[in-house]
Amino acid sequence: MKWSEFCIHTTNEAIEPISNILHESGASGVVIEDPQDMMKGQTDLGEIYELNPEDYPEEGVYVKAYLPMNSFLGETIEGIKQSINNLHEFGIDVGRNVVTLSEVQEEDWATAWKKYYKPVKISERITIMPTWEDYTPVSSDEIIIEMDPGMAFGTGTHPTTVLSIQALEQYLQKDDLVLDVGTGSGILSVASVLLGASHVHAFDLDDIAVKSTMINAELNGVENQVSAKLNNLLEGVEQEADLIVSNILAEIIVRFTDDAFKVVKPGGYFITCGIISGKKEMVLERLKSSGFDIVETNKMEDWISIIARKPESR
Ligand SMILES: C[S@@+](CC[C@H](N)C(=O)[O-])C[C@H]1O[C@@H](n2cnc3c(N)ncnc32)[C@H](O)[C@@H]1O
Image 1 (cartoon, rainbow, N blue to C red):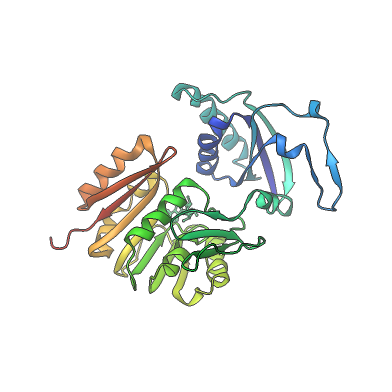
Image 2 (image 1 turned 135 degrees about the vertical axis):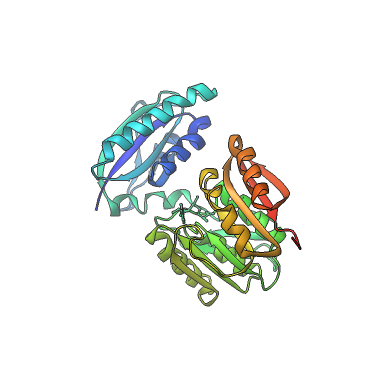
């Protein structure tokens, strides 16, 4: 399959909002490249290279993302450029804001991000480790999640994933039955089982995410406790759950708070994330009007997680 590589040179400050715009526009495999890192290196064939400093700008970064080449491509790109230009209105400096487009084959970009993905300790007990890296646990109770996110969202290092895992670590109880809505690479499903869940039902609209979830469940030896399937949010789901976790965008969360309330048991938790701070109030209001109590909210960079609970009796 052919893809269009969208590459923008911008500032560190604009990485997060631009990545968010690209994800929201359906782009895959968002990669951040620091030109300084690219000046010297080793090619895939093992040759050492050093680029002429004049060939690269001194400051800023490249944000790259991949869009399928289809009949909507022109409109999608115009929409992305427009949203990036609008960031000025929020006081975000987007720097040179120079966009280049090129055509690539899927296999060229599908592995390009791997060199930027390293083992990372993301909470008290959990370390995420890419399958191709070596890592020795620091303590005996450390939980290691091995991940190969492939093309699905969820390397584990995004603030929204970190916030979700930290909330799971705090609220998930042994033998809980969990629903993971918008599973991506399956990272939250795997984390839930490793933290003690008896079973996780994982849902996603994207076929690649469903496959990735099962691959990652297997990598971590929890494939018998994870079932992933294609599903739009909780449509048609009747399985009662002790805990629901969903790291999707605010606009999507507000669409299924009533369904979440129906399937979560009294006293059970609904962990929501992927909420940009400006949309926190909208999600809080929606959760409350569906019947949830708000337990706490947490923030990392500009992202919010909300932990809501269904009252014991109603
Ligand atoms: C931000 S990613 C989260 C991935 C992973 N759970 C994590 O925390 O890293 C959101 C995921 O939600 C999925 N998604 C978006 N809309 C959805 C919908 N209506 N129903 C199910 N999944 C959806 C996307 O395909 C994507 O994989």
